[in-house]
Length: 173
Image (cartoon, rainbow, N blue to C red; front, side):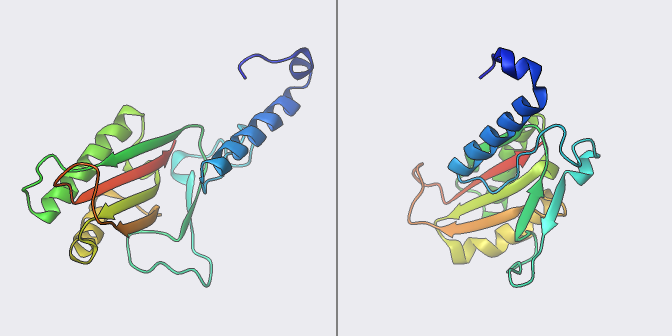
């Protein structure tokens, strides 16, 4: 994909359109709900703070504070953070969730991002009813408005024995 044909070299706008189309196709195939925009798209030169916009359509309310029903994100890089968990499985729930969020922050930083760039966050809990209220409290200490889209799921077990919470994130920068 890195090499342009002679016709691409003479028609850079068509090449950009093909790259955008391919990017959208790849995002769609991966189940992404974000818009991939070309460098020439409206808003591409806006400040980073304008790169995310919460989507709050009538009929699709947020069930709790700390997340948006949807996010429109503009950027040039997408960072996928694999599920992270706490480093101390014997710590209390709040500490485990904070440790997990801190680990996510380390991965985001390594990718040149921060929690401000997160557009989607998914949390998996072995004890959803017990842990969800704590997670809802803690996540607002890390995430900023517009809050990212969010999903919380109760599961019977996670991949690491003893792990009861795992959180993954997607950021756009």
